[in-house]
Length: 363
Figure 1 (tube, helix red, strand yellow):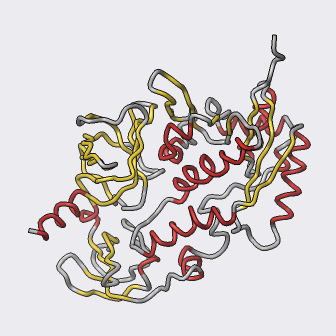
Figure 2 (cartoon, rainbow, N blue to C red):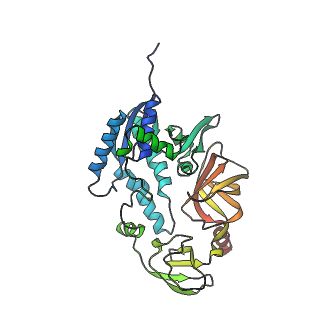
Figure 3 (cartoon, rainbow, N blue to C red):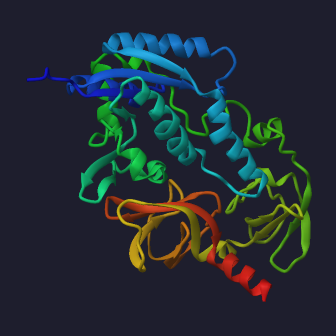
């Protein structure tokens, strides 16, 4: 009879309380655990050694080994550069969606597997289950911290080798467990924004990466120029701040045109769309061929709304909201749900109004 072999789990350790607690729990659950940390190349100057020291101390306290890998080249190529290029094209990308798909459950998973890992665990608040259709992704039990939105576009093939030890826990419980195990003192403060924009604003970062802020016209719904903007990369759809044009009602950003360097603004009522089209589709289960009902989340902090989903083929789908939604933003993720279960999703390409206008223009 062959000797019993523990399942080997590598845990992606960022240094935050969630990933440290995930590693400790995995060890207590009987896995053969190794921590793995990746450097992005965008760490603040002088902090790399500090991160290494804190992670090593945390791993020692937990009782596991730690390996670090330098993914600077891959991170720049697969996350940071696409982020910059998307902004330069007038989109508002969500880099966490790219990072989970291309880095954590892409390059990092591959490296962990090469070092003997059976699966890669993270500190995400989400749940996985497997049925006859393959891996299925579900919301975390703590709905206030649910991170299934960020994981959805990684897709079932990558998540088949994933594990989420915190999926059934609340954030409050995780912090308490970290305190009880003596690892809370090693935890880094949690980033609330894009991790690789370590200081300054998006505008500063984008300019550093070669995206110049060139002033241009601000145009209202009637086509009238009402002012000048400071560079399109400073604005996103639905934004109110930074327009600085006196008016009886506030102006909001409703769109940009990179080719003419124009910022389009409107009233709050101008921000609503009947639906969207997403591309780069990912499906959990068979790719749908017919229209179906679902709920859609169009950004991480937005509420889900009921909708009709119409598959268009070639990795695209049309989503028609039951009630118009505000500030649908190309570049963000659209994630479809049925209750707690993730059905699939993709990257928002355009609103249905934009698609209709483009079709009309071609006639």
